[in-house]
Length: 571
Image (cartoon, rainbow, N blue to C red; front, side, top):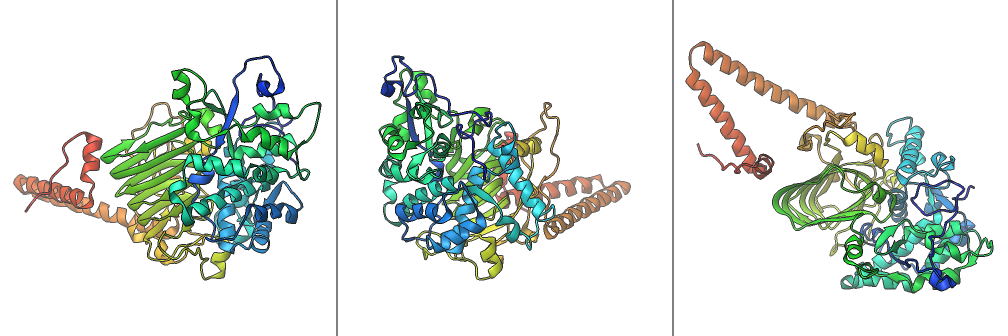
């Protein structure tokens, strides 16, 4: 099995390059006389904040039991879903549905197995988006070129991910499980940093797959899933500052050496802002790849096309958070990083392609449209998700209900692997329903496949699926840009036949109504009753205004046109 070449994770470099040392990196520790910036490290929040509590609490897992996976798999660098399911159930005692959920979420985070993708084995290191594209193409080919739920189980179990990365993710889930079970108030960046410092030896041991208790530089590069490397308050791809530890042509170093070096340099996210000197340094701290939209009410918010700079797409920790909003319509027509929607009430959220995981937490009475690698839903009520998702949805039980995460009762659902929630939560899924002019261009950059939509695979029951009669297509309220070479004019995600037919019937009814109004208007004009024509137009306009008021759409139209919201008419 091929090894991942040494290199900082997420950076496009030659496949034969090494973890090159930043000038002076670690110089203070190695006796260098150069006064170069010192690198510090903080924890990637995605694994802790964006992925929910996927374990069955209490799982009974410990860090020691997680590390037993390395022994049972022969310390391989990658693992297939089929092998992971067997190992998770026999070695860790996890339920089948939990094993699937953990694998699918990490698959979306990492873009698939880096070591075995054809795109990676070429001469030039590829991005996570390109790796994701390769994995998605392979999945579609195994199903005959299109999504086939009957062939999905066999096709999906052949997927592979980085085993060290998966174990890091599982160790992070142990912390999330404990937070959910008993100490929610301690879930802070300081608490996360302290947890990583305490268990750093275990995290590093999890990536030591080449030789027990010893690390190659390629092994250490897997820590890029966990840690962010920061110099003068600005994040860079993980790895360059630690390469000096492999001195005198040593191929491996002891786990304890790297553990001691990193532990004293791990900071909480809040502390990073104090690193370096000058106001410019403080202003740059995580500013360019971490975006937050919050505290909006009774408005329409449209983000710019270029929400993140290109550099941010190379960092695993890039994220978008939309939180604490009410009565708001939010449109994000952009390539998005991992995205967290939290504490939204009576909101409509339409997102461009999410290059990884979309997490929806504590949202109520919302409509959400998105393309994404994975979607995780927890503690939500009366939420409809119109999604194109490349792995089965993951549903986490509402807090306060039975904390057991159960698999669906049928064997096909257990094989498909969606984690199910107790019925009654009011979360419903539907195929994706929107588009904007630059969408296909953004899809290509994200690695999300619009053809691989498994939005309904493994859902617990029919109540979790939106009926076709209620399906609505809602395009973004944007005008076409003159700079676009490829303009998206319709939904790029194929609709299942029942939804497509329902849309066609609705459009036909609309055409019939328009034809009837036009015919009536023509006949009235022929007999000289222009007064009745005006009355008919006023009546139709009045009914449209009433519909806007009753459906809560009047403020959306008013905000988009910068006019006063219409009041409901009488009579």
